[in-house]
Length: 185
Image (tube, rainbow, N blue to C red):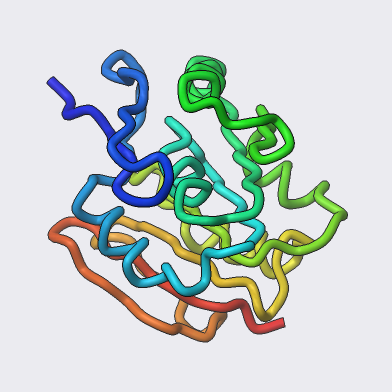
């Protein structure tokens, strides 16, 4: 049985997200999420957030609860996308605050031509080892610039191309590592 995800802080604190037990996802755990958001809390107010590989929308909703101005969630799995919509409705998040794209993350990053985001979350599926490819896509995307803070969760077994980025912080949590960095553009 999977533990229900809850919003940890902000105006939605304590609200639970819809059950995701039948979905092929591994959301960021509550312990890791708390550590990540405690680390970036000063960066969140009035920020524009991009949530890649959104899954349940967990990181989007936590961001909005803690003061992010808006969030754009990208998820290609139809069942996950529908779950994000259910969570959005359950939490009464208006459409102007949370925009959803049902697309492949790499396609989205290639086609995106608007303003860059202040904060970008990426929690790709561990078995696929997408970290290096994702960083290359971010480097060439309009979604981020040298001031966009990127938070990437990877398996501790996956290598991280530190030469491509300006690493701000790295936190280990057993079998996963969360990297906080900026792209060198």
